[in-house]
Image 1 (cartoon, one colour):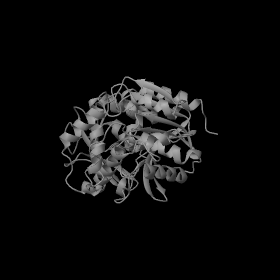
Image 2 (cartoon, one colour; image 1 turned 120 degrees about the vertical axis):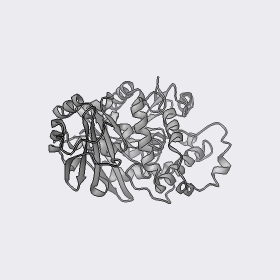
Image 3 (tube, helix red, strand yellow; image 1 turned 90 degrees about the vertical axis):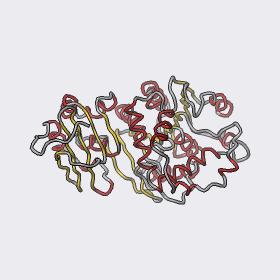
Image 4 (cartoon, rainbow, N blue to C red; image 1 turned 180 degrees about the vertical axis):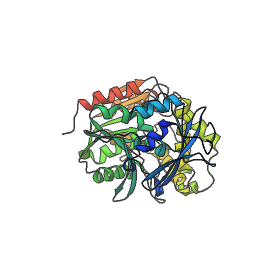
Length: 397
């Protein structure tokens, strides 16, 4: 951060231009109030103060903002001149976002000046079982993206950017318990429950069918949705899905006795969280890894968010691999066309799981990419190219 602007220093014209274009209809501000800091490297910092439908630019005040966006003067100028420049600068590392990506990217969407259908838009969807926070872009065949454990919809921002211009309406959701979505304290947070919430989202969006894309835990949820509601699902793309373990699980008897409500207690220290996130995304840039830590902590530092995280993690570990109702026997009944993308360097879900999937789903398509656990961030060109090809071959009727 450069430092506060003086009370008399005028804001750069690029920042003023952005705020003049502010459209409250494409940003979802929890509670209706937020303070987003725009830092111009070597020049100064200004705060965008949002209250209701209004946004005002002020010299930065003390205290931590809800979100922080940092770029040099030239990059801010390009963002102001080119409505697509904000997300492009973010993806190239020219614009750094910290703290709350929901608000940071939301402000870029709200100041882009884009008005046509399919513009990037953040909003809350009221389903019959609770409120879900989504970001969407594009028009055409619907694609619903489901993030991994501890993640948020922000992990699919590259997917929105890649697929929306190709004739798809991409909707990335904060799963219940994560991000800005509701966090019911006594929900089971298992794959079947999450799958029903995905169907609730399709109902609320008035979508008869949609393709599903899921990373890690989101992949397990996509599979469960396809197994239990195949008539609502087109194709499923599984990015390093959290499939049931086949090796011995020594902690299973103990975890069955542990209540997820223990998550209401003291959170994990940030240095531990940073280490975990960097192991999850070894190929991501430092900026992406830092943003990932911020996104995780936004939920995890709340009692309900911790309880949801522990419950979901417990269920991933306890997912039964065999038996009549076990994951692997049931997986063979998947009727949706499927494509699996594995990370050659994935330390959580090894690419060797491919051979087990091939035994029960011989028609599934597979790719092994030179990446870790989050292909859409670490190998976006290959991942999204494979998605476009897969969806193009099986349009939703």
